[in-house]
Image (cartoon, rainbow, N blue to C red; front, side, top):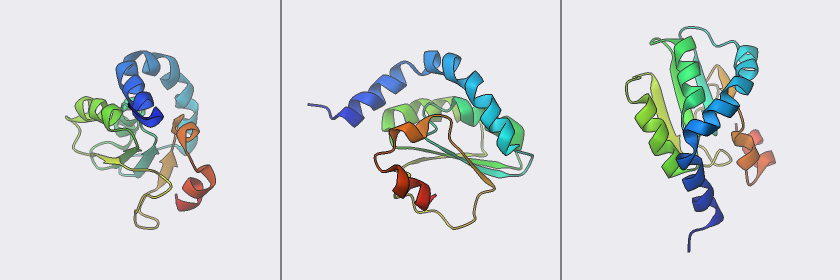
Length: 128
C-alpha cells in the first residue's frame, strides 16, 4: 500500500501541467521579489515538476545555476524531463529539513508552494 507521500508525489507528477497553469502566475511575484539576475545561484525548494525552475533559469541564464530540491521522485522525473536541455539546472531528491548543502552557496532561496509539504517546517527553514 502506497504511503501518503508516495500518493501525493504521483498525483503532483500526473497533474503537473495543470498545476503549472494555475500556480506559476502566482509565483511570478515571489520570483520578482528575489530578483534573480544573470550568474546567480538560486535554490528552488519544493520545485515540483520544474515549472518555476524554467522561469528562474531564464533569468539567471547560462552563467547562473538553479538547484531544484523536492522530496518526490516521480515529480522530479517530470522536472528532469522538462529541464534536460538546461545545463545550469541540478535537481536533488531530498527533504529540505535534512538537505546537506554548503553554507552561503546560493544567492537566494525560492519556494512557490513547496513549503506547504514540509513535515517539519521549523527544522526545514532553520536548515535552509
